[in-house]
Length: 87
Image 1 (tube, rainbow, N blue to C red):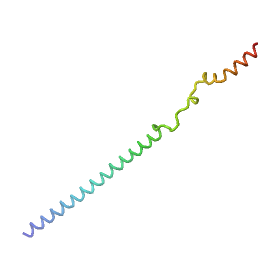
Image 2 (cartoon, one colour; image 1 turned 90 degrees about the horizontal axis):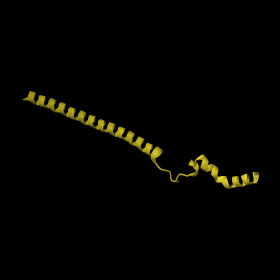
Image 3 (tube, rainbow, N blue to C red; image 1 turned 180 degrees about the vertical axis):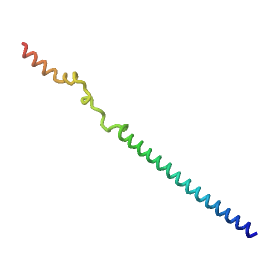
């Protein structure tokens, strides 16, 4: 009877250690997944902030104006100079 109790005690200790190691592995793998999800989240948030977020002020047309249109701003003055030059 003592031998059977000893075997059951060893079996209980073995199963208990197996459950403890299983729990440690489960918790460590969950932390590992949370770590990589956090890394991807930070990367996605930074990418959104850097590349996709709109500025508060609307874009100015003058900054993106073609050269031909930009030259036409002073057309009145240039026409007057041309008329005076070739009268």
